[in-house]
Image 1 (tube, helix red, strand yellow):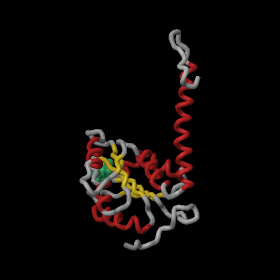
Image 2 (cartoon, rainbow, N blue to C red):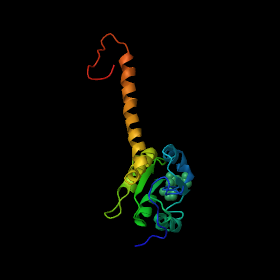
Image 3 (cartoon, rainbow, N blue to C red):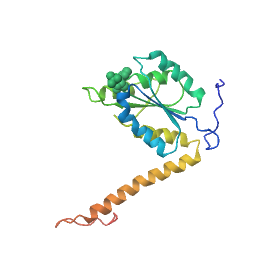
Image 4 (cartoon, rainbow, N blue to C red):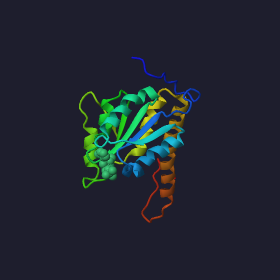
Length: 191
Ligand code: AIR
């Protein structure tokens, strides 16, 4: 089926700055968590949009958004919600774009309510669910998905992952400096 607008390839020249990732949250009370996704996308220079929509408070707007997202050139949707979090699933029911769900900790059930609500999708309508409050991982996963069609982004993600290893190398160097009478060096790890 033809899309409304042909989306250009993900090359830097092609997309013209229009958003590739859509971040949706159930309420602005989710913003402190969802900002971690925005920060990562900013760092990776990925254009994104951000909006609030609620599967319970604005159900028609959620459907309209999800049905139109692919035609606007959106590649991945990140949806965060707390409590009985239907938002990512309802979006996924109305699009073939990959949907990444972020369960938000907020109620007396500490986010486990949202986790189960987002995770336990019926066969046919997957939502890729990250950890409770795992908004940064949602952005990383979105970038990895888009890396499949964007070599420049793939290289940035490889550099990011290499940086994670360097953090542990530094941690081992710092730990090696700790002095205890019975502490001994581990030969296979950097001093
Ligand atoms: N929520 C909003 N509509 C449906 C749901 N499940 C979620 C929001 C937020 C929580 O309910 O995602 O995590 C509380 O929202 P509020 O606006 O009362 O702070």
